[in-house]
Structure formats: structure tokens, C-alpha cells
Image (cartoon, rainbow, N blue to C red; front, top):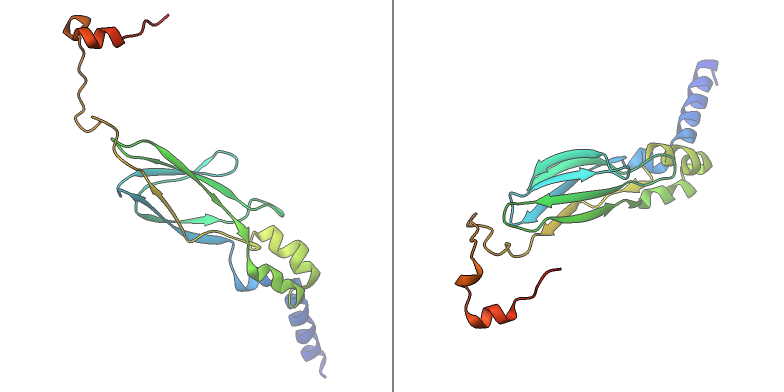
Amino acid sequence: MKRNTRTAVVLMMAALAIQGCASVVSTSSYPVAVSSTPSGATFEILDKKGDVVHVGNTPSTVTLRSGNGYFSGQTYTLRFKKDGYPEKAITLDSSISGWYWGNILLGGVIGMLVVDPMTGAMYNLPKQASVDLNDPLANASTGSLEVATIEALSAAERERLMPLH
């Protein structure tokens, strides 16, 4: 074998040896479809540290990183708000990618213990996050408030009143 050919082969083998299986086949950022019932809710996404990483309206698709440092998957909190509905929050957790286990056959120890954990490619995220905001709040859609005096109450309603201390 010529020296240049041998060098090229050695370099290719070294490049393959330092790659992690999940890093080669998968990714460390994933598109997540965010939706709500009813649609048109505003949402914010917070990471593990509580930092807001995205703000938007449903429906929407956002790209989120699956890793949070060496051997640490990311967890997101999604907070949804819509006028007339109660606020809701859900959690989006990363999980270990099936491609990560391919390191046993292809990526080796370096891929399993260094490359995939550092890049975050050993984790994946769900493809969607959805929330049902349930029924609207009572009288929230009218935007009005009625104030009544005790004299406007019937005798039966007055008997049910409880003093506040």
C-alpha cells in the first residue's frame, strides 16, 4: 500500500472510531409540534434552569435541544395561556435514543462515553406537546364584574353568608 493510501485509511478509521453512533445517525435538536385545544393560546418554554427558550402561539413547531450537558438530558416546562381559560403547564422530558445503544456494535467506548453524551445526541424528545385548556372560566368572556350590596340579597342568601375574620 502506498503511504498516502495508508494514511487515508488510518485517518478514515480514526474518524469512524471517534464518532458516536447516535451522533452519526441521529441529532441533538428535535422539532416539536406544540398545540392546544382550543388553538391560539400563547405559550412559553422554559429549560431546566428556568430560562425562557421560546415564546409563541399554538399551533407551532419549535426546535429544541435534547441534551443539557454531559450525560444530562433536557427537561422543558411549557406554560400555556389563553384569555378566558385557566393557565396550564406540562413537562417535556428527553429520553435515551435507541441509536445510542448502537455504540455497543459500532461507536465503541468513545462514542458511548464521550461523543454522544457531550453532543446530547444520546437523547431524543417527543415529536409533539399538546394541552387541553378545558372549559372556559365562568363569566370570563363577558369581561364584566357585578358588585352587589348586602341589601340586594334575599333573606335566605343572607343566612348563608359567613363572616370573615
